[in-house]
Length: 70
Image (cartoon, rainbow, N blue to C red; front, side):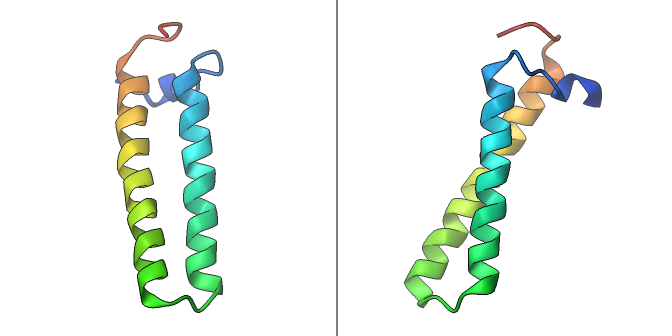
């Protein structure tokens, strides 16, 4: 597994990984910047954790596959 295999712009999984990272960043910003009611904060935290888990799975898959496989 090589870290350089993570960058595969022709692979749709790469772009999904980019979108998930951007979404996690936005959720983290909202959670830190605003005082949200507890249920909303817990829901957003759950989404952020799910994004991290899904992003790690996609990153693992991208690093394991040779470049060019879609």
